[in-house]
Amino acid sequence: MGKLTSLKKAAAVLLTSVTLMSAAAALPAVDETPLLSQTAITVEAASVGKVTGLTSKTLSNSEIKLSWKKVSGASGYSVCMRKNGKYPQIADVKSGSTLTYTVKNLPNATRENFKVRAYKTVKGKKVYGAYSDNWNTATNPQPAKGLKVSSVSYNSVKLSWTKIGCTNYRVFQLKNGQWKEIAKTTSTSYTVKNLSQKTTYKFKIRACKTDDKKANHYGKYSAEVSATTSKAPAVVTPVSQHGQLSVKGANIVDKNGKVFKIKGMSTHGIMWEDFSDILTKDSLKVLRDDWKVNTIRIAMYTYEWGGYCTENGKYQAQAKQKVKTGVENAKSLGMYAIIDWHVLNDRNPNTYKADAIKFFTEMAQTYKDYDNVIYEICNEPNGGITWTGGIKSYCQSVVSAIRKYDSDAIIICGTGTWSQDIDQVLGNKLSDKNCVYALHFYADTHRDWLRNRLQNCYNKGLPVLVSEFGTCDASGNGGYNSTESTKWLKLLDSLNVGYINWSACGKSETASAFNSGTNLKAIKSGTSQLTASGKFIRDWYRNH
Image (cartoon, rainbow, N blue to C red; front, side, top):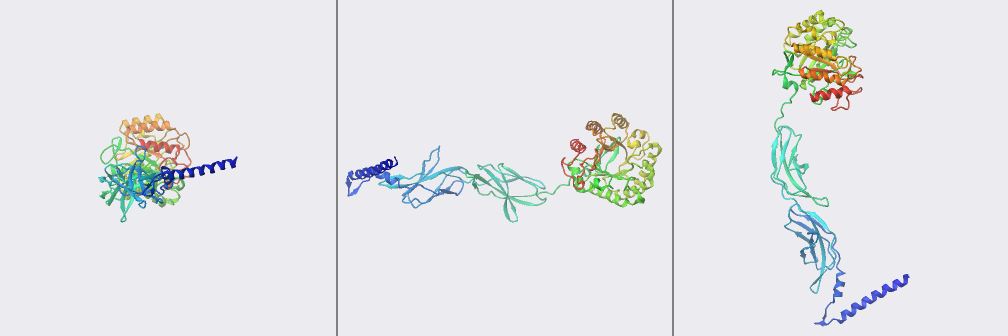
C-alpha cells in the first residue's frame, strides 16, 4: 500500500511539470521575450517570503515607526493597519531594501495593530507573500498640562491637572537634584504626604499609555510646579486645649469655664515594676491617641510592701522618681497627671499624716506652675474612719500644705468606706474652692444604691470625681460585668462627672486592662493586648 501511494505522488509531480512546460511553450512571443503564464506568476508568488521581525518605536503622540526584517527578492512591502477587523493597506514601500515606515497623524494615546507583507512585481503585477504576524503598539499620550498646586499644609501638598487620554499619570518629585517617580494614579489629582514643614518642593507629571503587550508609552513632562509647606501647628492636646482645671459647682471646668470630663487610666502600684510600669512616653501616647485618655493617675502606695512609708523611707527616692517620670511624660504629651497618695491597708490616712504633708509640700513646690498636675491626698480611707471622725481634719492639713505653694490645682479628697461615703461630705465640705471628693466603685459590687447616692450628692452641688472604678467586683479579680459598668458610665456621662479606670497594668486579675505578660513600657494600639475589661474601656473612651 505504501509503495502505491509513493508512485501516485511521483506521477502527480511529473504531470504538473509537463503541464507547466507545455503551457509556457504554447504562449506567443513578442520581441523575442516570452510572456509568463498565470501559472508562472503563481510559481513566483510561492517564492515571496513572509515578513518577520515586525516591531516598532513610538516617536510621539501621533507617530509610530515600524521596522521589519528584509525578505529576499522582495520588490517592496505593503504596510497594513487594522480597521473594522480588517487590515487595509496604508502605505506602499516601493523598495525591497527599505525596512521601516513611519505611520503619522495617529490619535494620541491609542493602541494600533499592524501587519506587513512583502511583494514582487512581475510584469507590472504585484505578487504578495504571506502577512507578518500582528504587531500591537500605542502612540504616546499628549503632553501633560494644567498641573497646579491645589492646596498646601504643613506636611502635604495636593496637586491637580487637566484630564487627557491615557492609562494613568505618573507623579515626579525633585529629590537631591534628580526627578524621582513617587506615585502612579488614574485620578487627576494626588496628595503628596509626610512632607517636612516650611520646606519648598518641586513636582511635575506625565501621562502613560499601556499597550496590549504591557509596554508603557509616555507623554512629555508637564511644566514643573513648586510649593512651600507651612509651619506645623502646635499639637492640640487635652492640656493645650483646656489648660488649668478648676471646680465650678458640682463639676470640673476648663480654663474657659466649660465643663470638662476627666477620662483616665490609673497605674497599679508604681513600686511593682513587673506589671505597672506604663509611665513611658510611648505608652502614655498610645493611651492618649488610641484610647482617647486625657489623664493618667499615678498610684503610689503608702503602706504595702515597697510603699512610700515602709522600711524607714527606703523606697521614697525611687517612688518620687517614678512620680516625676509620670508627671513629666504626661506634661510633654499634654495629659493631666494625678499624684495619688494611695492609702489602702493603712486604712486611716492620719497614720502617715506627717509623711503626707512633707511629700505634698515637696510636690507642690515642684509642680506649682504645672497646669496638668492634680493631687489626690488619700485614696481609700477605710476601717471605720469617717469624714467627721478624722478624714476631714487630715484633708484640711494636707490641703493647707499644698496651698502654700500651689494655689489653684485641683485636690481630690478621699471619703470613708473605701471612698464611697460621699454623702458624709454634704453640708460639711472643705472651705477650699478647688477640692473635689472621691467616689470609687466596682461595677459588679456597687450598683443602684451607690449610683443613687451619687445622683443625690450631685443634685445638691457636691463636686465628685470617680478617681477609681473597675468593671468587675470589689476584689478586682472576678465578676466582670459590662452591663453594670455601662449603667455607671452612662450616669457619669449624663452628669459630666469624670472617671478613672483601675487599672492600666498586666497583673493577672479581672480589673487589669492588659493581658498578663504585656510589655507595658511599649503598649500597642488596638485590642490585641487587651483583656475583656481593657477592650470595654478602650471602646467606651473612644466613643464617649
